[in-house]
Length: 175
Image (cartoon, rainbow, N blue to C red; front, side):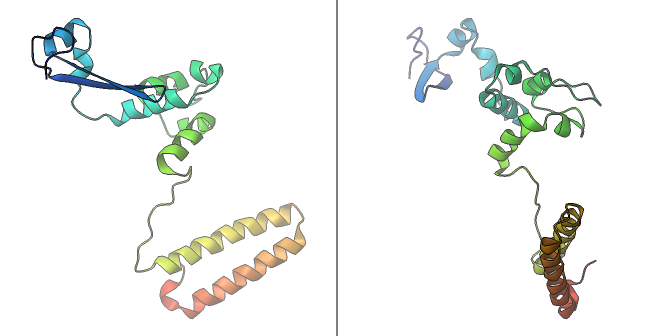
């Protein structure tokens, strides 16, 4: 295929752009790409996840305040606009500082905002049951604090049932 700009040289640089759900392609030679300023982005051969994240963040921001990125991490001082440019967070506290901006992004990438990890198949049922018991203990505590005693009694009974099941399977006991 010949260059779509000069029509003389073979095209070696190919760009695909999607704008308003319409795809357009341009095929140009290296010389024309360099003249049009397209060559520098064409030299980026490796896939960079930070650029992908930064691009996704730009596409997901809806309000002008989010676009400006005045939110700042209190620990490392990173501005949200800095994260948008690099796709990299400065420290662990950035997750909390930028939580409202990151939640939709994480949900879109991972399908959820909470990391669940993997459970070993050998002890999967026991580990799942232990996590469920722990979650119920937390829920029981919150119900007692809110003085929802009927709900708390139901949760207590569920915990006892699960602990009894766990005791009947010694290999699944809490570690």
